Every structure is written in structure tokens, then in C-alpha cells.
Length: 331
Image (cartoon, rainbow, N blue to C red; front, side, top):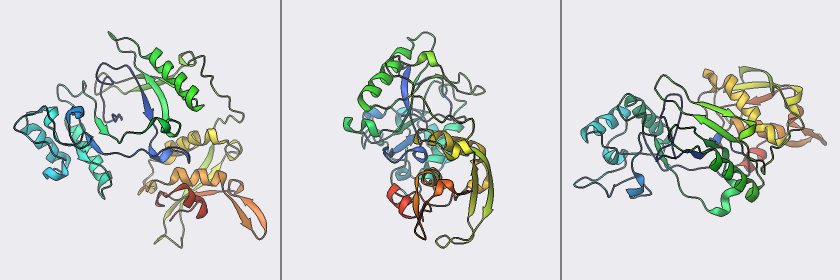
């Protein structure tokens, strides 16, 4: 897998490929979708097919050199990674990868890997080379649980268009799982001052994978939201709470619209300083407010009918069962 962001750019998908698929961030997955684990992150493609330890360690192509996990080699910062990379003459096959598997410093290690990529972004071969993330394999029986966000294709000059392959993936996935996932055109950046562009075209979709119709289409899901601090019996201090007022349409959204609602919420408020620290449960809290019901003095109540929905970024990500057991307030 590769990681692409505004500050981590490359001009193609690698290996002369022109199609692929995009996975949702774990914060966006629904209850019946598989959470994707990670193993290690390389700032540049690292020829991981030839490496041991699930692609994270020693490379059999190199001689008189033993590649290690960055942390095991004493490399814990982007600056240390860059020095190590320059020491091996910018050899992609000899670079170390940051382990991001069940470590207390997973998030920090990934961030150092991203920073390392930024430090070599002006290198001659950086735009030609994608970043690389190793993840555990999944079985064919898990296809329906994969959090596939889109099938993508790139219109690279000189290479066959990936559109037909992306359409084929869309059709087969729909036939096997019953889930409709869009085909998206991805125009990747050709230079550091160019941003990637993603486009949905109705004509790109496979005719045998019909576009689902939404009964309750909303122009907007969030009417307004305000940050405030409140006491909480399970969280020290007064954590920041985002008090959300949904639109009437948003209050009546369907399951199929929940991801779009969270995307709108995050785009409007996700960069606010109060959103941090973000412990990964904001999407769970939003979904719970839409689906949870309980008993109040013998009367059944629905959280979606509350005037405000209060969401706290500091709350931890827990299992979906626990989210509902804890009344949308995981702790």
C-alpha cells in the first residue's frame, strides 16, 4: 500500500500500474467493516517483496548489509532516518522502515516517516517513487468487510488507461458483496507545487454496478457546532466537547449517508485546536447518536432526536458493542 497526502506527493501508482483501490481511514469504518492494521512505513518504495519480517526488515537483494526496523537500528526521528538514508547513498533497498505495529509510539513513528518523506521530496527520484506501507494480508472471505472507499484509475500518458480495469473491479466487487463502491479518476501531482485531483464521473461507472439511489439526499448534514468544556464522570478535567446541531435532513439521514455526514463534520471542524488530542472515536460517537436508543423513566428515547449531539475527541476508540453499551460516550 501507499500513503498519499497534500504533503506526501508522487506522480503515479508505481510499477506502471494505472488502477487500484483506496481504503477508508479506520476512523471512518462502520460496524461491519474490517479495521486495517499496519506493520511498517517506508518513506520511499523499499522493494519489500524481497524483505523478511512481512516486508519490514532485511532485503535479500543487498549484500554485506543487514536492513533493520528503524527503531531497532536506533533511528527514531526523521532527521536520523535522513542521515541513515544518505549514509547508504540513497539506496531505496537499504532504507529502514518505521515499525507501526502495536507500539506505544505508533502514531509518532508514522509521523516521523511522513516527515522523512517531506525531507527527500526534492530528491531527483522522489516524485517518481511512492511511499510504502506494509499491512497484514486478508482472506478472500473478508472481501465484504474490507473498508473500500473507491476504485481508482489514473490517466497516465504513455500507459493504458486503468478505467476499464477499475470498472471491472467495481463490477466484480458489487457481484460478490452487493456493495456499490464508486470509480474515481485520480490525477496525481506531477510536481511538488501541484495537488492531486479526484473526480467522480457518472460515465466512468460500470453499467452492471448500478449507482444506488438515496431517498433522503441532504445538501448539508450539519447546521452548526460549538466547542464547549463540560465535566465528565470518566474523564479528568473538563474535556472539549463539540456540540453539534444537525440539519433536519441530517437528523433523518440513513446508514448510507453517515460517512458523508462525518466527512462534512471533519472538514468543518477537524482542524480546530479543540479536536486534538483525537483518540479516534468521533465517527463512532456520531454513528451512535444516530442509532442508539434507551429507556428514560419507562419511555424509549432516541439520541438522534436530541437537540444537540455532544462529541468529545478525547474519548477512546473502543469496540462498537462498547460504544453502544456506554451510551455513545466511550471511556
